[in-house]
Length: 130
Image (cartoon, helix red, strand yellow):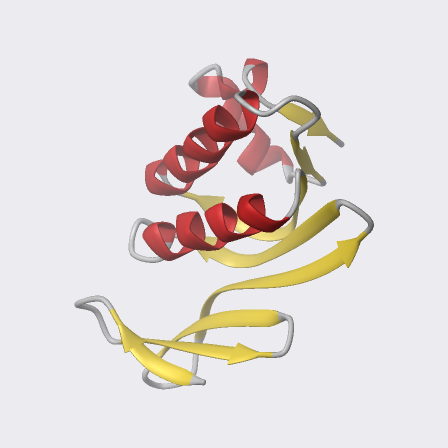
């Protein structure tokens, strides 16, 4: 599956367990790779979670929350997170907080991404594992 998204020159590609957003020239903007293990889904992020791709990221997070009660987000490949990406995480955290036994865990953040969370107090709102 390959389709255009948004007003910018961005294409979305879906291949098995990976969704990629690329510019028209093929340059990777952002990707999410999904891995299932028991009742946990792990979403591994790569690239830049900009405001342009944040709505699609939120859609992917919400879809994961619909099928699994436990979500782990691996930030090891993420360089930058925008306010839109932070909002998406907060929206899903609030949804999962209403469900007993649910969890959203954020893992393997770079110091730069962790600093973004800490600057606005989000490091207190999320379970963050180094």
